[in-house]
Image (spheres, helix red, strand yellow):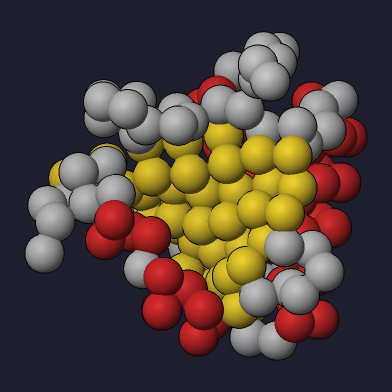
Length: 137
């Protein structure tokens, strides 16, 4: 099954996803820029964490609502909504990963995509704290 094309600029879409996460106080929100990585399945991953399954659920709903209201986009695919430990929202060029904190540490996506350019966001005002090139450990 072929992926549909997104109508929204991937950079803008990744920022909308991050904004939705931060609206529900997601922790450690990062945007991984995968555009220069061969075989990457998306242009951006946006990763955030919640402390409880209820917070993960609220973050997921906020992301979907924010993206739909601002860009009229629905996720192409959704996974993990039932168990609320790792929810994936696939917007084709941008994939949102919303983890319960302990699951995020276990899967360590940031390390798997260690060549990605990383943009960390400040949860209080959504400004960039750091932007760096990282290398795999």
